[in-house]
Image: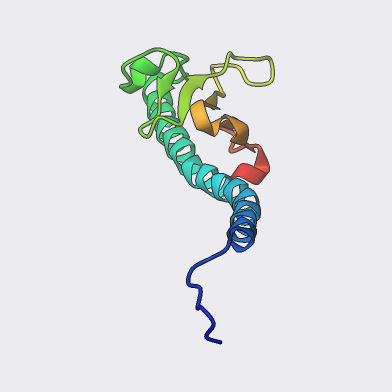
Length: 134
């Protein structure tokens, strides 16, 4: 008796392969998204450091900081979108502990797909928050 040779996959083998691929994808995709968000964080860091540099230059010429980003050369007074579009940049309102005459806090608010990563802040005293994002 001559046996027939079967080529290819049967249905059970195909279902097992699809299940394995599905399990690997559910584990790998969230890790990939976190890596992308971490990489996108540099967009916020760069924008905050550039704005902080502009604030320092403004302070040296005017002897005060400003809440108006147009005075630093930006196109809008608040909520300036960063270069890659992952954050909006703004100046926090002055507080008793950080008056505009001696201190300013800049914020990068995460938008779109970057929102799960959270917002970034930096002030002229060198405080960067949240610490684990810098």
